[in-house]
Length: 145
View 1: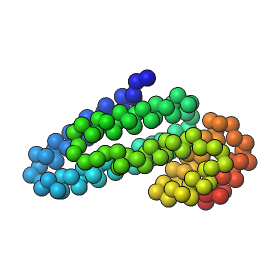
View 2 (view 1 turned 45 degrees about the horizontal axis):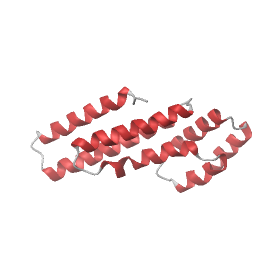
View 3 (view 1 turned 90 degrees about the vertical axis):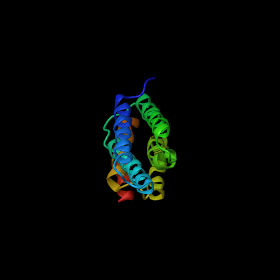
View 4 (view 1 turned 120 degrees about the horizontal axis):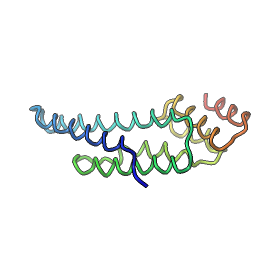
């Protein structure tokens, strides 16, 4: 399996961002802080995008994980910070696709770092792709509100 092209584009953009910071006359500590913020923005953007997916196969979910691993490995090559902890939140969200139907309400309560809209998007996708009954989906959504 091959990762998606957006990963290469994202890596290129982040490398460019790092280069501009390095040549901008900014103290190293501030550069590291801005790189850290950049990683947080990448993580939040990926989660927001994943939460808006309307249809996804098991192979698609596997590709999401592959894309994330390629991104982490790529970022680690040119960022001195430890990238994995910053992007762990994305991995947590992707792994939630594999939970049993009965676990989503508990998972949502255990993960306040995700917005209500992100969790609703996740539940709607999983319910659709795994063939949940309408009543089960609505009950889960009602319990997280």
